[in-house]
Amino acid sequence: MRITIFHTNDLHNRFYPLDYLETLSRNSHTLILDAGDAIGGSNTVFRFREPILDKMSAIGYDAMAIGNREFNYLRSVIEGRVSQVNFPLLCSNVVDLKGIINSLILPYIIKNIDGAKIALIGFTPVQFREKSIWKKLTGFQFLEPAEAALKVISRIKDKVHLIIALSHLGLKDDEKLAREIPEINLIIGGHSHTTLKNFVRAGNTFIFQTGCYGNYLGKIDIEFNAENIPAKIKDVRSLLIPVKEKDEK
View 1 (cartoon, rainbow, N blue to C red):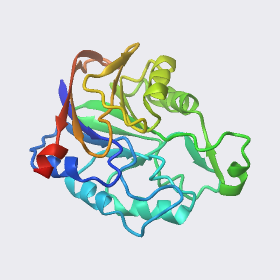
View 2: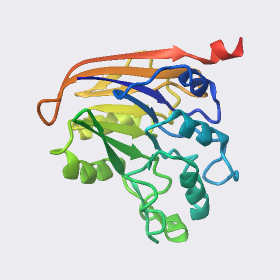
View 3: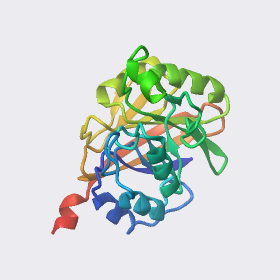
View 4: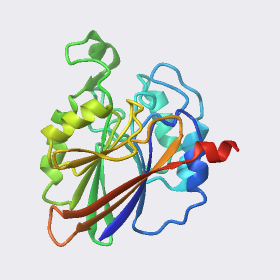
C-alpha cells in the first residue's frame, strides 16, 4: 500500500502552502497534517478568531498537533480554537488537572485507509516542569514526551499498522524521541524551524520538517506492507515544494 502525506508546520499565520493545497487533487490515500504553530496568537496572547484555522478546515486537514502558540493557559481560548476547526487537535503530553479540556484535545487518533490503520499522536513542548508553581496556578500538567508516548503506544501498538507523531518539540527532541520510542515510524516535526530537504533517520524512524513561515509544503510518499501489524515499510520518499516564492510573484 502507498499513501501520500502533505504536511506543514510553523506557518505563523502564513497562507502560502494552503493556497497551494487548494490547487491539488486528493484521494482516499492522502493525509494532510500539521505539526503546530499555525496561528497568529500564542499561549499568552489570543485573537477572537484565527482565519488560518478556518482555511485549514476548508481544505480538509486530517489532524494538527497543538503547538505552543495553539496552547493557551485560558481554557476558554483553547475551547474557542477547538470549536473553530473540523479536524482533531492532538496533544498527548498535556493534562488538564481540572478535567475541562481533556475531552477536547485528543492524545491520538487512528485513521483507517483501505483497511490500514494509521495512528497519529500529538506532542507539545513542555512549558513548565513537574514541580513548577505554574502547574498549581494554571491547573495544567506537562508530561515528558517519551513518558506520554509510552502510555499511548502501549495501548495501540498491536492495533495499528503505522504510528506517525505530529511533534512540535523541535528536531533535537524529535531525534531523542525516535531513539527512545522506536515504535514510531514517522515524525512530522516543527518548533525548531528546521528546513529538512531530505528526511533525517534516527534508528528506524523517519523525521521530516518544512522549516517555517510557509516557505515550503512537505510531501511524503510511503509504501508499506499492510498484511501484518506492525507494517513493514518498503519505501519512503520526501519532497519540499517551494510555495512562498510562487505566490509572491
